[in-house]
Length: 57
Figure 1 (cartoon, one colour):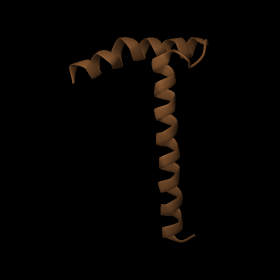
Figure 2 (figure 1 turned 60 degrees about the vertical axis):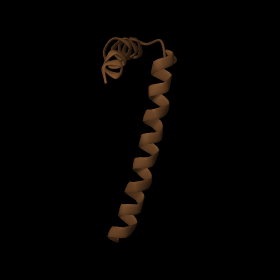
Figure 3 (figure 1 turned 180 degrees about the vertical axis):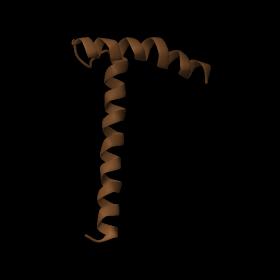
Figure 4 (figure 1 turned 90 degrees about the horizontal axis):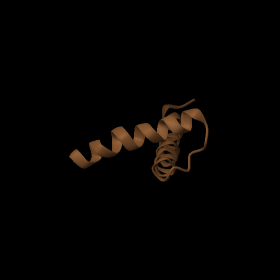
């Protein structure tokens, strides 16, 4: 496998991952990420830790 093709694949993969994380962050902010224990933990962490950090910056 040539380096250029691997580089291109990795570049596209990073774009897909970044898009997923943006979408997931929006879901967490709106509380639409599910009803499970981990989803509730993630939402509470987002609201109690990350939102105040964004306000401070």
